[in-house]
Structures are given as C-alpha cells and as structure tokens.
Amino acid sequence: MNEDTLRTYESIFGLLPGVDNPTPLVRLNNVLGYDHTEVLAKLEWYNPFGSVKDRIASKMLSEAESDETIRTGQQLVEPTSGNTGLGLTMIANASQYPLTTPLSSAIPLEKKTMLRLFGARVEELEDDLCPAPGAPEGAIARAMEVAAQPDFVMLNQYSNRANPEAHYETTGPEIWRQTSGGVTHFVAALGTCGTISGVGRFLREKSADIKVIGVHPAEGHDIPGVRSIRQLRQTEFFEPEEYNKLVEVENRQAYEMCLRLNREESIPAGPSSGLALAGALRAIPDEPGQRVVVIFPDSVFKYASSVVKHLPGLGAPPVPSKSRREELLDAMIENARHNPELTIDVDSAHELWERERPLVVDVRDPDTYGQSHITSAINIPLLDLPDHLGELPDDREAPVLSVCQVGNTSLSGVLYLNSLGYRNARSITGGTSAWQERGFATESG
Ligand SMILES: Cc1ncc(COP(=O)(O)O)c(C=O)c1O
Image (cartoon, rainbow, N blue to C red; front, side, top):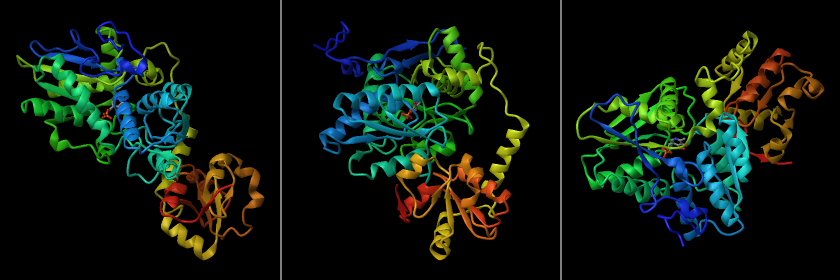
C-alpha cells in the first residue's frame, strides 16, 4: 500500500527516501547575497529517523542480511558520531539486532540520550568528537574489539561500500530528477565522505560539467558529524582529487550560518548544514544559470547543547569558564602526555612487564576493567587512588605502570603517583586498547 503521493505507508520504513519519494529540495531566498545563482537545500531530516544517515543505515543492513554477514540472533556494533547510530538502531530494532555503539563523550547529550531511548547500548569513551579510523584508541578501536566477538557484526560506515552506494542509488538520482537535470554544483559537508562520493559519482556520470564541492571544518571544530582535514586524511572515502574544490570553514561561521538559516529562512537546519552552505557561498562565484544543491544533513533539534556553546544570546546561562586551577591541571596533564619521563609506549611497556612484572594500576571504572585488562593489573579507579596507597609499592624507585582505555585518564594517574614520589611511574600511551591490539596478554574478571 506504499503510496508516496498520498503519503500513506505500510510501515515507517516506507518513508525511507528514493527517487519516487525524495527528501525535499527547498530554495534559499534570504541568506545568499547572490543575484543570479540559485541555491537549493536538500533537507535530509525528512528521513524517517532524522538524518541523511538513514539512507546508509538501511542499505548497509539490508546488504549484510542478504549476503548473510549478519544472521538472526547476532548483534551489531558501530562507532558513530550519532546519526548513523540513530538510523541503524531504529532499523535494527525491526529485525531485533541489538546495537552497541562506542562513541565520544563529546557528542551532544541530546544525541546520546536519543540513542539510549531508541534502544542502543551506548559506551562513552574519551575520543575526538568524530572517531578517527586508524587511530589505535577511541570509539573505532573499541568497536573493532567488540566486533571480534563471534556474536557481533560491525557494518563499519567508514569502509562499507554500501555507504557511498546508498547515495549513488538514492540521493544522486533524487537530485538529478528534482532539478530536471539542471543541477550545476553539488555541495556536501565531509564526514565519512559517503555522501560526496556517492552523489558526486552519480551526478558526474550524468554530466561531467557538474562541480562537486566538499566542505570541511577547521581544526579544533565542534560540529558533530564532520571532520577536519587531519581527521579526513584517516578516512577511506576521502578522495580530494575527485572534488572540484575543497573549502575550509571556521566553526564560528558554520554556527552563524546555522543561526541565519533558522531565523532568516525559517529552515531548522543543524550546524553541519550551516557549514556546508557557508562553504558553498565561499566557493561558488555568482554567475547566471547556476543551480547549486547543498545537502543539509540533519535538523538543529538535537544540537541545543552545541548551539548554546557557540551562539551568544540564546537566553542560556553562560557556560562557566574553567577556573585558573582547572586550566593549570589541564596544562599539567597535557605536559605529561609529551613527557618521556612520564609516559611509555605500549611495546616498551610490554617489554618491561615481561622482564620485571611491575605493578600495573588500571585506573578505569571497575566494569570496564572487569571486561578486559592487562594480565595481573590491579584496579584502582583514578579518583579512588588516594584511598589505596597501601596497595602501592613501599619502594618509591619501583616501576609502576598507570593504564586506562586509551592513555588519557592514566596521565592523571601517573601525575598522582609522581606526586607521591614514584619516580619510575609511567602512563601507557594508547592504553589497554593498544595493548590488546598488539595481542599482549589480557584477562577479564
Ligand atoms: C550531521 C552530519 N553532517 C554531515 C555528515 C557527513 O556526511 P558523510 O559521512 O556522508 O560525509 C554527517 C555524517 O555523519 C552528519 O552526521
């Protein structure tokens, strides 16, 4: 009974877009400053679960089912900046695949809460806002660790061809048809680069003259879902040679454009839409006959905590600035990270462990420690250290290794040990994840 004209559907999944049921393309009228160039925003929050990522979640899961990568009774694990997890959780709910998603604790609270509400098991980690593939630590490494268990399957949006394919099969053809083949420029913000790869390839096959423009944020940005150049270099589908232009946009400009879109166009676009449009305006000179399509990946509703941070005057209490004491502590931790007297790489740590069996203090919480830790490591969560001095060696010259998941919290641990006089205390860079990745001995319980 799926009937797109009447918008009447068998189930929510009938709302997944395609060429007969495209997401809307809406002309921008007030924020452009062009006399000739027309700009159309493709509003991807009209996907059933709220973002452009529903397309790839659906495609990745249906392919995994048809080639039997996943079978009934198995579970999914996916590292995500939020949107892929949201779409995947809802689509996986229908087939009863539970989803675990390791993600950065920097992801906005709204997204984490919605993931939990939808039924995902969220594991928060200290990681970049957008997880880095190839990095030995963080959400992606953790997801790989979980995926190594027989009952788990990781679809991996960072390397799954179904990601760009979904856009090649749906987003691209939709744009072509919605503009009656008149699109001259396609602009997308870059995250996994699935959107730009799939849509770009489709449109170029239709007309080699169409310009494909990628927009990325500057280093240190706070825009969920997109990646800086450094982060993009670790991304398999990032192919800058395929784009006509690659544009960088400052965090502030992206948020300002997000605000203007909401106020001046009444389009409730999220920060990465602001980023993409700001990039489009910078990259495309005003010329007659141009029709630009910009992807607006999701709406602003999940980003209250982000916009409060980056846009003044929203009526929210000012974000408390860090005290000088906290800043000093942060600086000490950062100094420790680069101090060879306080850190040790995982291979040297392993050699030391084999040779001398030093005390290994795992400073993570007991649950995470219980799942897997370096063999014979004792568990003292960081904040409990002062209550467990009796478990530390009497000899202040004895080697002590401080370890956590990826080597961040353990830096505070080593600073504390150092302050007690343990001159040979070291924090293991890369943490338990790096240790496991090397195949060194771990135990659970
Ligand atoms: C909000 C948002 N914007 C932009 C993107 C980038 O899309 P892609 O991963 O296809 O490059 C994403 C991807 O996660 C996203 O969640």
